[in-house]
Length: 251
Image (cartoon, rainbow, N blue to C red; front, side, top):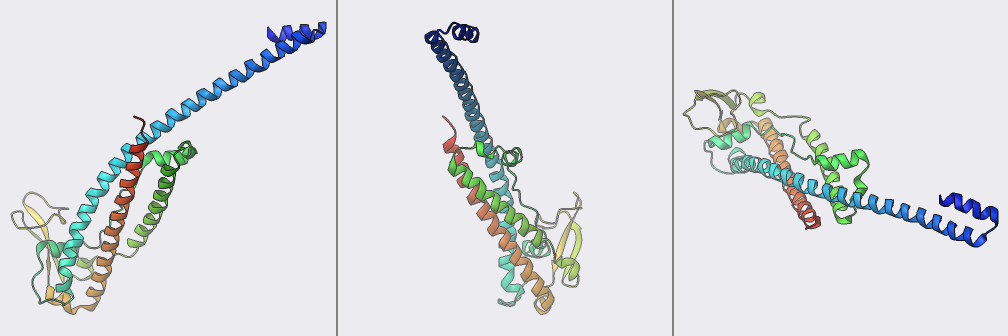
């Protein structure tokens, strides 16, 4: 309608009317575009808020898993540390406790740590990472991505050459099937049942004189310590990230 009137005004050479109608057309188009931009900006803000809330929830879930895994690794590392001076002849010889012996026998197992934040990977995969306008959150997520990639590479290196001590040194560590009522720690529960449990026996005297065993035990202990250190760093990063996400959630 407006364009038809504008055309009529131009044919009549009614310049004032033509100018008025042209201004109305331009203003109308501008307002329509502005309304569309406002709606798009509003949708982006709502999407960003939903992303932050999902990140907050997923970071909390991951943090819970990381803390549980770290506690298990800490138990093993503590047992290895208490056994270390005995195995390496820095203290008088004594039998290892059940927990210490199992920690040594199980010291080659390094499960891949939990590290997934699905919504973060979704943002990267769909090219929506820049939808997050909070610079600090974006910086912290990028830092976590770098940390995660580095730790995944470290895990591949950690499991590249395993020293399964009870297989490589069967004269030093012997696996036995014992009645369920016998004392045992929770490491060796695979293939166990209500009647019998698997239990390793450690010969400390042989350990102290077997240099290859000592070298491989040292290697396994070092890998476990580095794994525990990585868990501590991961937990620290996730705690800071979750606090920042919590602060960014709209009341």
